[in-house]
Image (cartoon, rainbow, N blue to C red; front, side, top):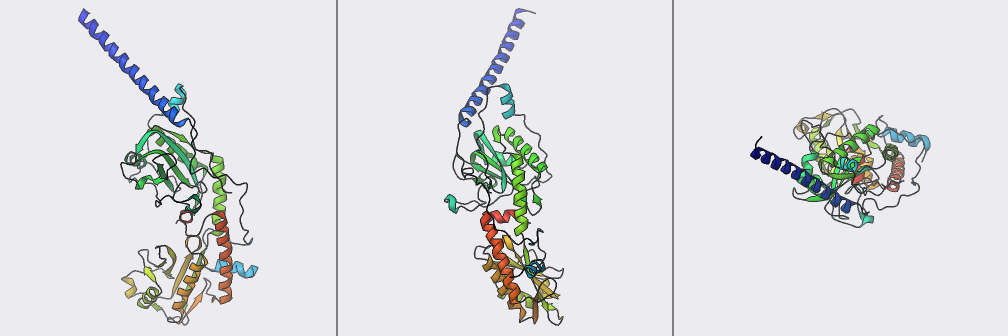
Length: 415
């Protein structure tokens, strides 16, 4: 080997050593920046509330049905005839400082995960964004909700654009329970739905929120484990530090929340049937429904909406055929049913009274009877008992901080 070759070899080795040294210096620099940024304790608007010692709830009658959805009115009225007339908060969501050891670096900067990709990726579920309002007036559901969601906090050493986040989140599979991704642009600012943010928006703090219960039951241990693994993979992909709260506490909260939902999840139905068996004509039904302020919707039923566009109750065919603009011209049916989804209808007892008023507007013109699911005619006394039961249900919901028709309630009772 001549002198030129030796010189070139020495230069090559020197360049490689220099590159390795520069890379090591860069890694230490970013690690020190992350340690400086995240080692301090920060308050979080999500986690400021002090946990209460116990939850105070009204006690419903012991024989209140515990099934998830009441199919019709009879399950409610039967119970009445027989009987006669803690909020959990997450611990502080700040992550520990990063250590200078190789182990800590490997933990926080894990290798890029291999995501399982759905054939048609979908964005996480989103909820509407609200301007900043006082804490005591803020409606639950417009930010991470520690009472009904398991929340993993991700803190990034450098701002992350909404566009980059969405590209990562699009690769995620369903967790089984609804999942929301929220972001903060700066510490102590309001949370935003990442899926609704402008692509150039940058976030320094993220919240992955898994709903703890819905009408399919409470979140399971497997679902929580899968959620944490997914959130940790996202954190590694984004070079973020993650904090996952106590899973056992979350499972206990999920079971308690599911029991509460079962206690208040009631669907009331008023059936309208002909006195003599003569079928109702579709054109007349549509006219009566529209005169009562109802609108025909794509789901095949009429809906009554309040001034904010929220559904209070619906009117459906008691038979299998759906109501459509075309079918109403030729349709006949032997019965219709008014449906009132108790926890999802805003307005409480007043909304129930509005449905009762609308139902009674059909009785006279159709020469019909208003009956329960067992075709027993409804009386004023029976309806008063229903109101009493509704008051008890609504009191229980208010005590829990889950108002009927609120964003939080609609998430819990979706489906």
